[in-house]
Image 1 (cartoon, rainbow, N blue to C red):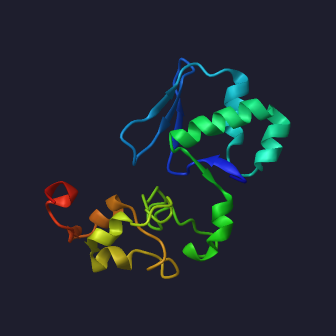
Image 2 (image 1 turned 135 degrees about the vertical axis):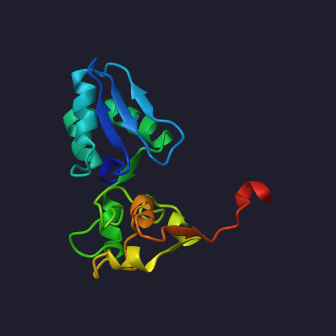
Image 3 (image 1 turned 90 degrees about the vertical axis):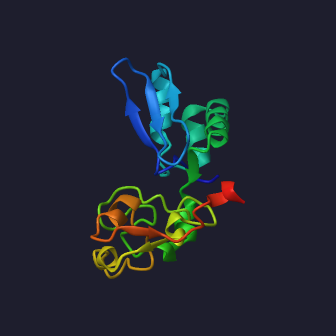
Length: 167
């Protein structure tokens, strides 16, 4: 991992008691870090994809960086910001592939999260929702499920209603 960062789909929240929560909309459980020390918080803050792994090690120490990254990788909450540079065609200039082009929130795009399939491949998005997408993002960036449902017709599930459990 060249330029590690907390996944863009993960929201950070600091509780009044100092505990840190990493909220993961697509995961079954959020992460709770009890009373992180100031150095740990600074390292977590530095995981924004702007620094290389080597720069993080120079600033925070090899053991601290490697241990934290190993833990975050195991929890699937860290990604490589270098992947943005490797896939420039996923989104038009100035737009992010993981952000809904209508509301600006996380779009839960499977491709942007590094999986082979996206939720939008199993639904039919209405013409009204498609019309709300800026022309340069249409057919290139996923809308979020909430915006897809905002149209007068919403989304229609085209997947097997039994899902994977019915097989």
